[in-house]
Structures are given as structure tokens and as C-alpha cells.
Amino acid sequence: MTGDRVLAAHDLLAFYAEAGVDTCVGEMPIDRLARRDDVAPPSVATPAGARRSSAPMSAPQAAAAVATSPPSPETAVMAARAAARSAGTLDELRAILEGFDGCPLKTMASRLVFADGDPRARVMFVGEAPGREEDLAGLPFVGRSGKLLDRIMAAIGLDRGGVYIANIVPWRPPGNRTPTPQESQICLPFVRRQIELVDPDILVCLGGPATQTLLGLADGIMKTRGRWFDFDTGRRAIRATATLHPAYLLRSPIAKRLVWRDFLAIRAALTG
Ligand code: URA
Image (cartoon, rainbow, N blue to C red; front, side):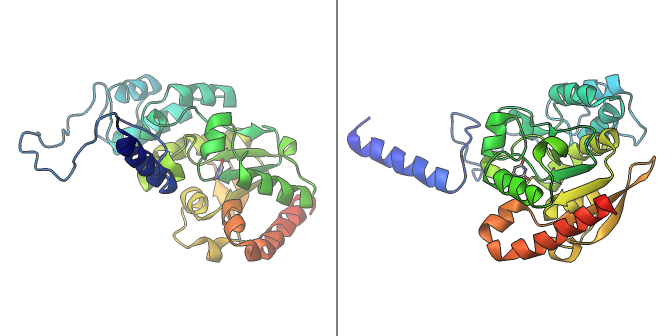
């Protein structure tokens, strides 16, 4: 390559990095705007073993449904439900997730980010999705926002070893983008099962996407934060609340006072 082309390539990569693109998913560029008369319409064929009815699948059927890629989002959600239901322990759930191919994020992430902390904890935090540091470490909330979460927890006498931390989506979305609603729905049965198995006294949703996905609420986080809800596991109702995501606090430190209020309420709920 000539010097000019090296510089141009360097500038282009710098532009991509700044725009948050940091994952290479193919070596050849694809012109998605070009007319493709030769391409067949998207297949609606159901992968082997998968069913299009709403009837529940068994775990082996679920595994078969996602064995061919990519399954439709509906098939992936049904497969996720059956697979998550079949987990009797957190270790089983982690192993099932390791083998689950229904979420496209898995193909772009370095590894599964399952959880951190004590599975017998009274408080469980659920964030949105792993970022770059979490993807490298295989643990949730270890980057800048995680360090801030540690400090906020410490302010009410909690620490990472005494709580349980997970995310809605256990694979890093490329460029740290917000998971799509489809990706979140595919992963939701797993985090729901994780909550059932941990069975905390208090569930804390971190940020809008986690709150909306877990609690099924349409309102934004400024309306839902600081309020209490019931998270129904099917066996019992867990007290759930929502607060601002630590990454938001890094951008808007003024909002820390709201989070301080939320954490005082969490402490009161734990001691009350
Ligand atoms: N943000 C999240 O929502 N989760 C993490 O694990 C890290 C950052």
C-alpha cells in the first residue's frame, strides 16, 4: 500500500472507532443499496425441528430449532423459553446459554457475560448489556460505569460480593449499542429464569431498557425510577424497583442525587 492509502485507511478506521464500530463481521464490504434481482426473497422456511405454532417446545426441540442459523426471532424466543425453563440451577442456565445460538449477538461477542456476585444475595441488579470491558473480562459492570456502581452500592453498605449482578442481554452488542427489542426479547426468558433461581428479596433494574424489558413498562426511566413494582416469577412476587443507569450518571452527574434517593429507598427496603 502507498503512504497515502495507508493514511486513508487509518483515517477511515479512526472514523469507525469514533462512531462506535469496533467489530469486524466480514472481510468484504457489502453494498446493501445495490439492486439484487438475483437474490431470492427471505426464506420463511422453518428450521428443522422448529414449529411455527405457539405450542411449547421441549428443550431438545428448542436446541434443534436454533441449530440451523439464523432462526426467526419468534422461533428463537420460543427456543429460549423452552431452554431457560429446562435449567434447574444457575450453572445449568449458564451452560444452556453457552450452547444457545438463537441470539445473533453471540456471533459478534467475545464471550458470554453471565453474572457476578453471590447467587444467594438479597439484592439483584440487572443492567442492559455488557460493554467492551465486560466482554473482555466475562463479568458484568467492570468498566467505568461498573466502578461507579460499586461506589454507589458502597454508600449504602453493599458490595459486589454481597449482591448478584446480571444483564438483560448476556452478549455485548457491537459498538456498545442498545440491544434491539428483538435481541432483548430473545434473551428475556434467560434473565427471567436467572431471577427465579437467585430469588432475591429486591430486584433493581438499572436504566430504561432493563426496566422496560423486565417490568414490561412503556414509561421512560424518569417516570419509573424510585417507584416499586411486583416482579412476578410465577411462584411469587419479588419487590422490584428502577433507577438510572450508572453510564447515564457518568454523562449527567447532576442526576446522582436522584439515584442517591433510590438507593436510600433500597436500603430502607432491605432493613425494614
Ligand atoms: N452496562 C450495562 O448495562 N451492563 C454492563 O455489564 C456494563 C455496562
